[in-house]
Length: 499
Image (tube, rainbow, N blue to C red):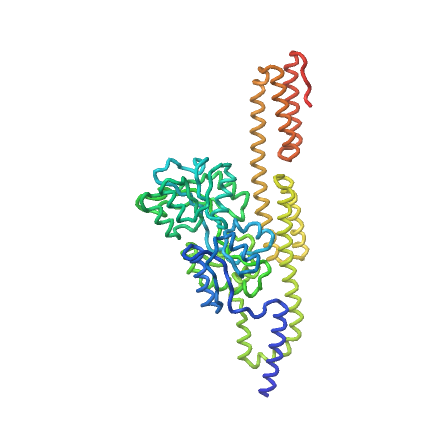
């Protein structure tokens, strides 16, 4: 009888393991690798905590060669298959996330753009540094990427260099640089802390909200308008003296889009089970909801990580329970074979859902690439995409979970398009008011000068019409106004016609 039960359990185990094997959740390896940063920097400290979490909670050894320049290097190694996981800023990861090549396993904090100047510097805000000497961070680092983004979007022309952080700060104190940029969690870098408080002291520049809001609207999956609280780096001076507007981006633990499901799930569970230990990098985890915070700001979350945050430990603890209960074994011997087909169907549905999520991301990326700056055309295409998946959901071809995951990035993009269209409409209204103000000036100009000015305006409005920035009715109203001006000056000889 014992032998029969053992044989029965063996068959049940075979059925269960076979079904799990079909689902791609086979036995995980005991070692996984990560690319973070050089020894002693912020990313290295996060990597060390990840190693403690995986070792303690899921018995995985995490290896890190501690020889990376930062986010861009980490992502290159991940995509090339040289490591299993990577730490990277969300803005640096944006294109890879949109294309589905990588997915976010966890948000492990937020990094802030620090622009440091000497305390005796005359500069007060980002816009004051035009033409100045700026250290933008070493090549391959997230600091380099984010600083370049904000300088480009601000239209500033500066003299850039890319020294290591310590070297750049030394040159700043010696007067050989005007500004040093650094991107990192608040207060986590002893290098920055010491540089701000030691002689000669340093201070931080404000980044105007108009600039940070522009980036947050344009790239909602990457940036947020944030503040560095007063006194963060020096409570006595204090520094900053008041809440300082700056730009921030998330720190993401990334995996490839085709990473093994069990590997991603176990990593997510090890972080969730020890979430309070990440509070030094992500202060909200000290007393907040870990499952929600570890996903906050992560538009492109790995489905297996999301499932872990919702349901808990992904390991098959129930197998151990079955092995210790012979009655359950006998029952499952009968039930197992009939259940296998149902499990296979469930797995196929899950696989189809993942494919739909990836195809929706690709479609959204294509909309952005095809329509470029034609915001209204992009909005219409995105609305069509959202409607297509809404109808699939209504028809029962999408689960609520899958539909929510597909719809979330589309809605974010729709909101950003609508905000830009409102901004463009306000600009068009301003242009129209300015034209009306120009009427008297044009009437007082010599005829040839007035005609030349009107021709310039005609060319500009034609371009705006072709690009979709203004509506046809606005263009026709301009033409009517221009003709009225010419008619008012008709007493002057040889009045040329508008082309």
